[in-house]
Amino acid sequence: MPLLVTPAVPAGRLAAQEQPHLPVRPGLALRPWRDDDAPAVRAAFDCPVIQRWHARRLDSDDEARAWTAQWAARWSAETAVSWAIVGDDDRPVGQTGLRDVLLTEGSAQVSYWLLPAARGRGIATEALGALTRWSFTRAGLHRLALHHSTANGASCRVATRAGFPVEGVARGSVRHADGWHDMHQHARLRTDGPPAINA
Image 1 (cartoon, rainbow, N blue to C red):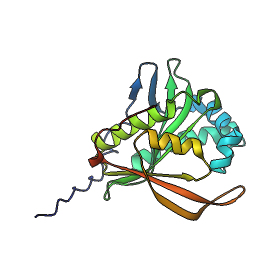
Image 2 (cartoon, one colour; image 1 turned 90 degrees about the vertical axis):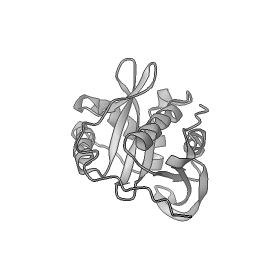
Image 3 (cartoon, rainbow, N blue to C red; image 1 turned 135 degrees about the horizontal axis):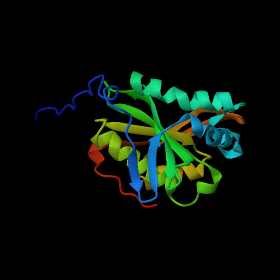
């Protein structure tokens, strides 16, 4: 039986186009970051829950603007991409995106966070579903992976509901403010079929 090999995603596939706006559902969408989103970004990184899992602070509006501005260059370099999760008022309520994009391997790492007021309503799960569909059908990726601390139950629920099963645990692999954490490893393959969203 012949071995089936998925072709590599050609370099330039992302850089040749503008980062798209992605619909999630009525009243919810993903769009590229803008300079005027800096206050929402700073509020997010001031949130103790986000600080706990990301171990990063933004100490000024200039740093927050630099954070939003970085994504255009990273899209052009085809190394990472981030979207603001926005509601009807076009104001950010969270973030989802891809890190460590390797087009030759057809792989990337998923990330997401929500501002406190947006939590508990299935928004992260739905946004991750939209990102997953785009990654597999438009970007041509084969594998999306994500990892989170085994102590981060909320992130685990989002991943599982979005169709990312746990593949294992990486022991003591990421250092947070309170020390080294074991990390759940989740992943989803394009061949797994459409995500079954159970927000």
